[in-house]
Length: 396
Image 1 (tube, rainbow, N blue to C red):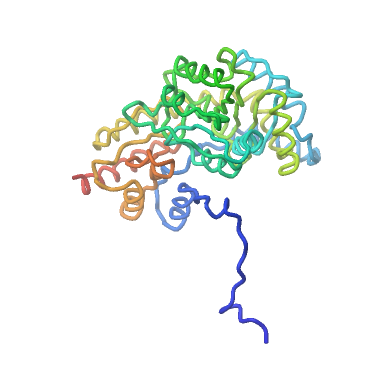
Image 2: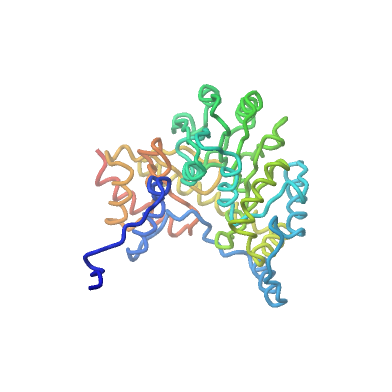
């Protein structure tokens, strides 16, 4: 008699690594958002702009010409050459397009590849807390051990170089940082980054620097970590097109790293992804060649929204560190007495405003929420009105 599928289910062997990996706290709130009508979302970390038309048009024309085959594992020669020129123009740093640049499926793949290329089981990676949700997960999936450094609103969510130095030991393989930072918007000064660079050089460590928000800075300058003295040979620079060029769905990013590391990452890449999407690479090439004016326009608009949401949070009574980059604010919600998850869930249910709990970004994100201001000014102002009503109701 056949098994009854209702009463008997097969037991599958799932790896310990997958079993112990926590689901993304951001994704859980996206799922809640999808099931609630009439929501104003300050949760999604992507531009509300469409990709500039000339970028999309370049990809469309490539399809019309039948340009739909695989490319080189490393990416098209044209894109790597243009990326090399771009990095030279932006930062005065020279990367060989044939041996030091790798085109990836978003900067997320570049992060994953860098961890798998660097780490043996039990190797440690030092990183800030709070930080982008994928940092810890990519270290764990590569068999490594994340070592978190607490940061707080009081110190501007900056990683303290002296804390980094204290945590370095014989198991430490890398320091993983991302500035401008998600979720806090922190931009670290060149001087503090130089202190971290000195620690890395002294201890023969690699710094993995996630600079996906490099172009989104306000009233300050971005420092490319690889340009610091002696650091090009000890840095894996991660970047991409998603945020600055409004190309999140294209999934196109890159890494720039020493020859040996790039070769190791490319070996893994060729067995897992083979190559980034051909039409996305065409779009990225057009973005590098002709997209700068659109970026400037978007950044100016984000800056206006940044000022409005900061003032609105202050009027509500939620203290907030002033972000200098990316498109997030990370206000404290401790005055309500709620946990960050309670605040986010109740705000969504009662006022239909979606934010992400700070705890999704690490232990020290608790007591905060992440709000993305890459949405319309109208949405921001209405969300602030709803949040003001909500905070007034629950503040102690």
